Length: 181
Image (cartoon, helix red, strand yellow):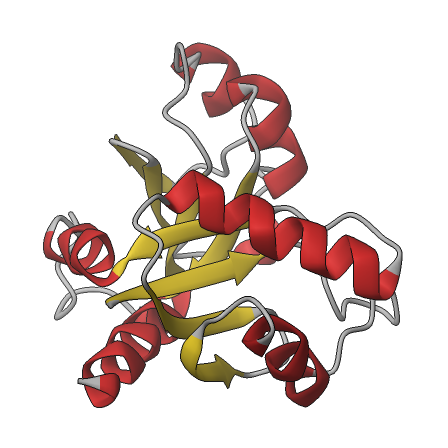
């Protein structure tokens, strides 16, 4: 059994696509996932599975949610090892940054190209972005309200599905993985 993290995009936001985490755990247990844990209401799932392909797990979770709730929810899955590597590559100095202004955009696939010039038009003056593999690391020192670089903009420019997590949630999900061992 391998440990995975699944992150869902756009649930429980402003009363849209409401999914109760306890109910979701029950539904996902039917997929032969074990040690299912959820974290906060924004769609963070830690689990173990014998399936060894992220894309297969993404599709199973996606279809399960569609069948049980009647709406589409993009799903991104990473192994615990992949999640640890994302954290290990974090490019910003945590001692010099407000951790409340740090996060990661997880991309479903590696983009065919990264149109930096177009993306940079949406950044606020002090925003810092670093693309690495299937992640976009961000530091928004002046606050998220100052930046026009939204998830919708990134998905449109990169032509891939994505979802964001702040630094605290990213670290907490790895801790939850380690607690399953």
